[in-house]
Image (tube, rainbow, N blue to C red; front, side, top):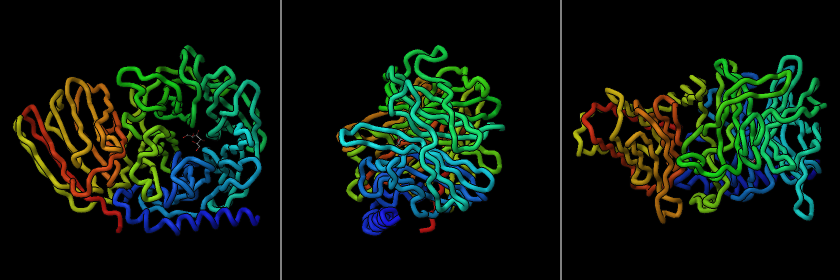
Length: 479
Ligand code: FRU
């Protein structure tokens, strides 16, 4: 108990010691969830519990590097006003001493149950993994119950990220795994009491169900039913880039298909990426009380550019995406920012523009703003937009391209998706982040960028004559 208190005390001290540095960082985000200090990665335990949304997150409060993770905790009644609560889980037991890794939350008989991975390393840096349970009456204070599922034969200790749901007569858990042959899988376990779990086997994976080689590890799986389809969201590691696809180091995407809960099998179609930007990983979903499937992702990535983030100088790094409502249409996931975000809108500025081919329209916007662009008719070609002299959007020859300056400003980099027509854009800017929703959420690009403080202009260019409705709102974040 003493050790437990000390750990929490040192988290409070780290937050207190860094508060001015973080607060004064001009890259700090105003309406996204970010760490009060240190490093944030995956969203965890998303749940709508007794009328409040709980978002937990992987958190190293002490450094801007990955390390021993706690579960940070934000709570909101409306998805816009968030309160940072005390860390829900800290790595203070033998079975989680090197990190309370990612996991999920469910409600049962008025209590909140958290399932997470206890990460343990020995002196030789060899890893062990324990799938653990913690329970709370109020969703604030959690009592750890220890490991509930052993590592099954045939798997390496890269076995983690339990996502649990109620399957009627029993509970099912899906986990990310690497088997002993070095293949990534999403595997299932079942329980009748949440404390004793029985391993069932893979639901999907590399070289399963006709998929072929598909990565050496799958992280953070999430399986749910939406609009008549079963959807497996998962993060495969080890995919080679293929044309415009799989350009990030690791991928976050989904399969749609049909899950047979009795057999524990998942027949599915092809994998598709959820987000086409540079900074999106480890998303998780929750079903809220109004029946919406809401997804939040990590607006970041573990890769070689991670340590060149300018915010490291202010002792914080990374953030979560906005909450997005999911829909499935014709086998494809559509993502829309939750409508609750509209309460952040300040005074609207709107233009109806008749841009001639070589004309450039320039508008100054707030660094925290929402920008909506609509066209009088569907565009087939020829649109460009520049945001704060850093992010550049181009729609040309059936491709939608988003480019940005590299974090060290030494060059440019871009991501591309094929797009046959452009109907509209909804863009959320938050000082050093941009989320671009294309054609009402058919495609999304999530990117961090670090523009100069004085560059607050948006520029629009067109190579065809069109009427463009351009609107923007400063987003009032109560500061
Ligand atoms: C994904 C991940 C998870 C793991 C967590 C550790 O980003 O690697 O698989 O549980 O991060 O922080």
